[in-house]
Every structure is written in C-alpha cells, then in structure tokens.
Image (cartoon, rainbow, N blue to C red; front, side, top):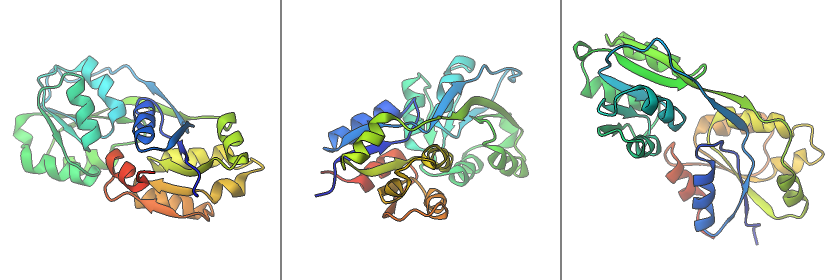
Length: 237
C-alpha cells in the first residue's frame, strides 16, 4: 500500500489551502515549502490603468492594496482569479492556463487605446509576457509585487516521515520551487530516497527539472497548470 503522506512544497499564501485540499482527499499533508515569499511595496504606479494583469496569486495582495477594486483584472488561472475576487475585485477574467494564454486573452479582449496595463509579478518574472503584449501595441507597466528566497534546511517532519516510510508523494507547483527544494535536500543522506518518491507537478517544465536532477520515481504532470488539476492528478485515497 502506498504511503499516505504527501509533501507540499508550495509557499504561503497557498500552502495552507493546498494542505486542506490534500487532507480532504484522504492524504496526510506534510508542509515543506521550498520558498519564502516577501511582499513588496509598489511605487511609481500609473494614475490610472485599463487593467491589472496577474501572473500569480502571490501578487493579489499587492494589487488589492494599490489599485481600485473596480479596475478589471486579468489572471493567469482560476486560482489566481478566485483570490482576486476574494480580495474584492469586481471584474475578474481567467485565462485558465499559462502566460501565453493570458497574453492571447488580453489581445482578444482589450485594445491598446484603452490605456496601459499594470502587470504585477514576481522578481524576474513576467518579462516575456510584457514583451509579448508590447509587440501587440500595449503600453505595459510592470512592477515586482513579491520576491522569493529559497528555504534552507529540510524540515525534520519530512526527514522523519521518509525514514518511517510514511511519505510517498510530493507536489511541485513551479519549476523554481522544485529547483529550490532539490537544492535544499541535495546534501541529505536520504537524497536517493527523495528522488524515488512519486511526484505530481504542475507542468512539463517542472517535470524536466526533476528528470535533469536524476529523479527515479514516477512523475505525473497535471492536465492543466493549476491547483485543481494538481489535486486531480494526486487522486483520492
């Protein structure tokens, strides 16, 4: 019988929500975030934007504190869109996919003459999306809404759970968190045991990251790049 322990590498905000969802499916969530997230103060914002563009739910808090809630929001996926609605935004659209899907939706539904787009993303992220939108004539103001830093040291709960053969699966929600987690446990004496776990990942890019590291366990890619698809791939006990 497969161990019921599931390692969740997602940082907050989002970690607690995923843990509750995993538990509802009958698994035992083990919290092991690979990254710390620090919110940033936004400066130099345009007086008025035609829309806010969000590439991650991590940027919702900064948006809600800096932009009128009546400004339309275009979100990369359903989870980010849901967070935007919960934050009070009244008009929210979801691309239900990745950055390319988000760009395509904006091109279909917006026009450059309506005004600038405020793109909020993590440090080093959103650059290709901004460039793509500018090619289509949009004025894009990109601001860093949050920064991430790798967590140092593997949680004792994970090490003990692996030693006791209570962990069988690990969830990776981004390539960066996967690489950070791999770096965190690389020097562990249980490195090869970690690589043998079943991995459920949000995209093929994350799967490539694991395979390059020598992952030996099964790797399942979610049907869509969002949390509900990750849970569907995990399955119910």
